[in-house]
Length: 445
Image (cartoon, rainbow, N blue to C red; front, side, top):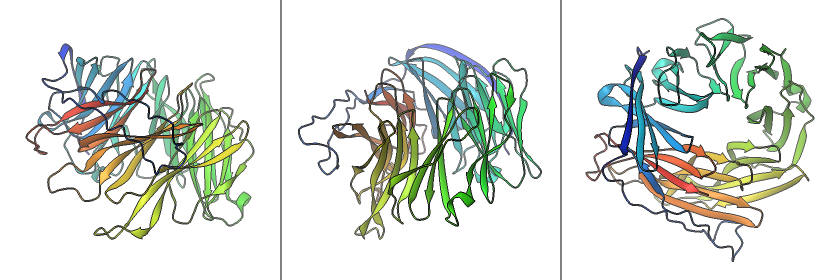
């Protein structure tokens, strides 16, 4: 485990984000093969793709978050052995801060940035060599560290007023801690039996502690309004579905937990668990998945559930040996209950999709987005070709692509201005070993 300590150097900067941001516009193409896209529906203009960028300083991994009409980007600065945060808005750098120091690059390291209370929570993992352990630090609105970094296990999440995490352990019960801005130190909110695999899911305020056992899935809800955890509730019971093996995905809508269960037969069922911990009835969907379909993300709100999955084509790609994947989604409108199967993208032998994310904003059409990776990149060239996204309107699907050559590309989230992503890009010398810039790209609204 790397030694990581607070590095409380915060610089408030009002100036250009970088000397010369590359001028770029999106390739706003509309795929005629995208099923559900009606002819005659004009493509929606996305405007200039590149919003702002940092000076060259970073290497992978990176993370990004949209906060207060600014985009906060984070990345490893290898020369300083630090995780640096930089806030960008209107082409200017607002502030920069080194939130963690003493870190070193490894191939499978990971970085996450989430909104937490009045500031942000940042977590760094040094890769497989750390066995899923990492460091979590709370930072204020201008990047200043709030307290010492915490040791975290493989799971953590953030609500609007606190951050929760699983403590690292070698044996014994799984202990879950949480801390708000007002807490002088972390507090234990739940203890789960050691034989269960724990997942944390955060709503607007509540924290759901899921314990996956041999025969069932339990949920413990921590409610900050009562400052207590409710007793465990069984939310999936294997016996309710016979001997059918299962996979499940979860997301939150407000302070309700939504469960999507996928059986080995492809059958799909959904259930809602209120913040009170009481599960609703299972709703079995009419549509089912094929044996080779792979669910890549689920999301939803109080009216909609989206199940996004990939499906391999029937023939292998020439010169690659594997099949390309098409992207599809099952769109469930709950009131009234209507299921729609939507083709989002045809199989493309030159580009592989993933990772995926989605955006469901009030008053906006759902968006599904994903990174496009080159299947056969040129030697030394960036592996990522761009960002694809689909706007799922009632009259049809609008297909969009933003061409971004990058070594890393991550979601930054959406606000009323638009949806944003951050890309790690090379300079004019195309040297992947040199410090790179983080570009902020606007791709919707």
